[in-house]
Image 1 (cartoon, one colour):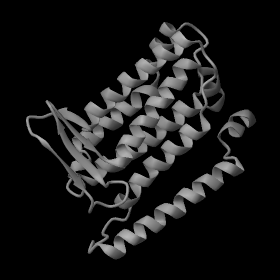
Image 2: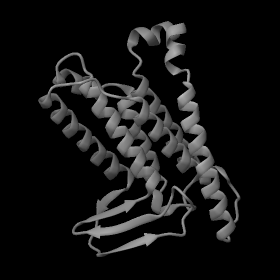
Image 3: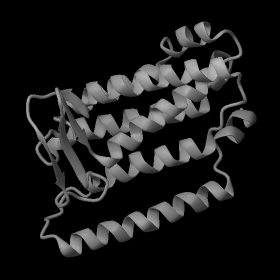
Image 4: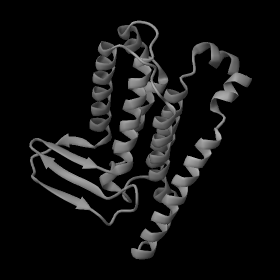
Length: 220
């Protein structure tokens, strides 16, 4: 139990990074609320993007893959890229389109915006900063998991998609898409954003921590 607690106990530099991010985000949100005539009925919706961004930054900063041979790195990177595309498609970042043009929504709250809505050929891209950063962080963690696999990459690939920490982000993306995605900020059900944020944070924590069966057994 002490070893498990040591792995999740934040280090001093981690607390410092998190505090710096929080101060910058509070300043950005205060500036936005001062400049925009927005009524704050539910503050948590303004804070959820910061939760995604902070979890993403901390996970990428703390997780460093062990050195691996070039072939393993390339295959792991390919799987991670495919994983990101699946998340982006399920989560509403990527969708089919028959439109054209690029629009940037600057008036959205920090983290939700500035959001770019672009039609690139048959594809529509709705790039909200917090969601893009979150999915990129998950893809990086998937890459690190595969690069660190002690067995063959094929075995690591099978284990990756049989573990709950890797399928949780897909659940989060489905929940978010049912909420209407980033484009529908302010119109989706409250519970959908609550659930998607909770599932995202849990998925990031599990992918970064990577508890094995024996450790989970000791924690029960």
